Image (cartoon, rainbow, N blue to C red; front, side):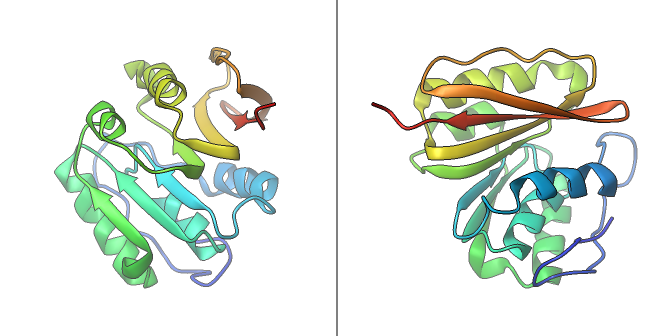
Length: 183
């Protein structure tokens, strides 16, 4: 696992040992960021089920202004902190050891980029999407990136959110949601 491009290009990232997390493969990550390449610069990002923090770190490396990393597992958050430090992004990030729902309930930020990649069988992806839409923390033209199994259907969200394209990478897919401009 490594940072693909940007200011931390080539930096190796630590992964959480064991089978409790499933890091996004470099191939999937590269596909995601190829799609997002013009939608990162200067944005506030949220890596909600951070794991190793690699998605938020990649966004920071490519010019995101700030990233909040959230994970309820203390071991995962320690890995995120080490990875953030190794890349020199301590001043542009914050780590939160909380459950995703508790974090979202207290959230007052507006994010331009949100990464959602919870454990696949947990049902937390749909719950997180519902929370995010209900509290409306995505800025105008902001993007939510969801990783899921290729055969998993994600729900539509109420306006102003719009479910966009789905991109398949073998057994994995990522789905983009956008918050459109309100009339």
